[in-house]
Image (cartoon, rainbow, N blue to C red; front, side):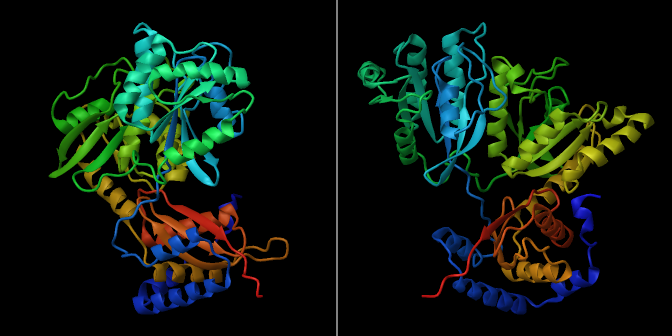
Length: 502
């Protein structure tokens, strides 16, 4: 039996009580609960969250986007070693030869109490374009995605023509750049680092990723260059809603965009991977205008990609950052794959609204339909809340059904629950099914508030850690009572202790 099965089914009488509760009564109860937090130790961030409970419930607020630090440089200068040193764990593959590829390009990192996203721009291999152009192109994409840049140069080799090609692009970007003279293992090497002044990026910072020398001071410097909230991942407000079309190569993403636009806007070819760059297109469907971004297909493993395919994956991530809702296109004629699931996970991690488009529906026979229903039930259960649309991008069949699905997902993504109603729901849930005892103690929920929407983000102030399955129980009730179809929901905890009396 699954962990979540032990929680009771939805009580319609409870739903009725919450819906019938006057807003004034709910707000009064919430104010009383919040006043009780005065007895607990709260920090400045807690206060910021609580002040969010008093915002206009119709206002659009965003969960803050972590600032992005990109690491760029030519092959074999120690970028991956630097990534591992900053993360404090071995994540990126390190090998003493150029062009070693790796599975991931971005990581969550923390330094001095600040969280940020670290982007490793390795994972490519020199191709026919030539190494100078290839490195510069890779760096350009990374800089587009970054708030600040660590430019890593090998102090033993000095500045090369490839380094200079990257520098020209970096200077034109007007992004903060820190020049790192890596592999500087001692004071003698520090003196050699002075030659890198010639690159025109200011004072070189000598460090050794391998030995950790000066890396702490380097990170302190990075924190002064990074904004508190990312400037590149911020949403644009106003204008047509922005839709990212995601999916494995050759599932019909470009065909979908072309049919929606009514023209051959992007190249369509049976050869997988013909799309390289996101293409923005204003499209009118069923009387509503949208901004569609057609993204390059995400291949099975980044480390199998070479050249342009790697860049395409980076651009896909960038397109998703700029979108509000993602349409994940799934080819129903093929089995749902780990690639499909990985792409869906990418959307969930980004916090964007989600619509599932099952493409090539006109090619589905009865046998495949039965298997598909089983696959959806087993593999897509964790996104059962996402609207589903059965379409044919080639013929345009049921394309108009995308509009209500997108509108539903975005409405949920924008939704904010009044603090009074949310706390009324929490009180009902605790009465219905209290949290199990842990070491003889029972964690209590002191107060709850929705800290942000886009995506809906809830914060619970508690006296102890809540089990993951209990948080899923709360999330399930939120969906059952308030909808939230088409959007991920985040439920965070702040465990606080009672203030000691003097």
